[in-house]
Length: 367
Image (cartoon, rainbow, N blue to C red; front, side, top):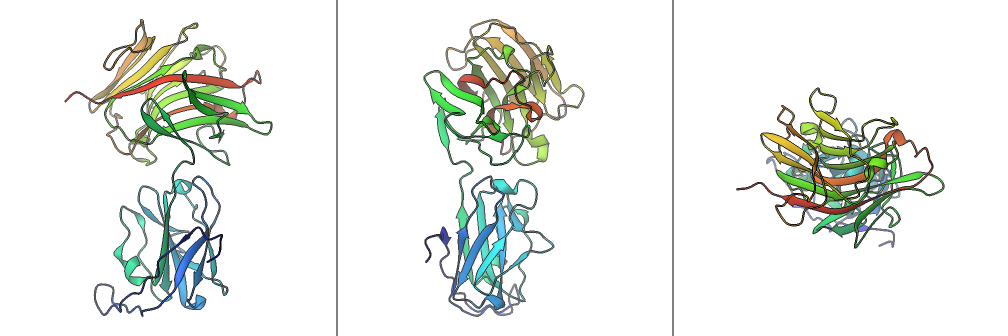
């Protein structure tokens, strides 16, 4: 096989199916399909592959990707991908939604005249694909190329070759934008000479109900008004407003505006957002939200907790409780921390921005 082939399927020698569940006959054949170019996570590049040992004009390729369920690609209207006379094929797998975040990609070689069912977000592949295909290939791709350890958890470092949300901005997983040391987790907005690059880390675990606590070791009250520090949960699934609960430090581009807020999404619903000011001169502050089924309690406090279950050491800066109808149920959300530019606007002073997060802590609800 060619050196460029990044994955190869085992040949499937299928038994003849009679007039059973699918009512089709698939002859026993010997052939294979491979991916010759599999896009990296977050990329919008096309998927490319090649079949071997099969007549190209007798088969089609059916591609499915997994984004919180299996989806037919490129589209439901045109689910089949043609095989070229030389055995190569190309499929666009980013035709909507969050396709570039797919963590699994599968391709099936199916005889012409047979059409497997459309995949529309199901948790498992339809059995018809295995019954109809004469060869298949699947790859799993990690959602992040770089993973770091911080506060006892693993965090994927976000990277993007194009502008993506929030902002939209370019995000970098380089050690110039995200790193850890004895101080904690460092996030930076940097200027690489061509574009401004932002930083985001995503915990690899979904934690559900409980108290999420973030200790900051930077006086963020003086941060440039176009910068945003986000301490939050997020689920890529659109249900329950992405299960997004936010603590955000930003003036949102308005000089002299208040510099912090607690939010339960959607933010523009009356009563779902509480704005306040973090005072200047506080280098260490702890910000938390306690997420329960009946409400969410937010707090910003001076200092840093000294032990499990303890509060921060200083005075309360601000607190707010929310018990509205938008309290989300748990799902596939992850805690996240990001530093980004509102409306993609560079700092008006031209200076790069750094924030240190000293600690993240999660405490599950009391039994």
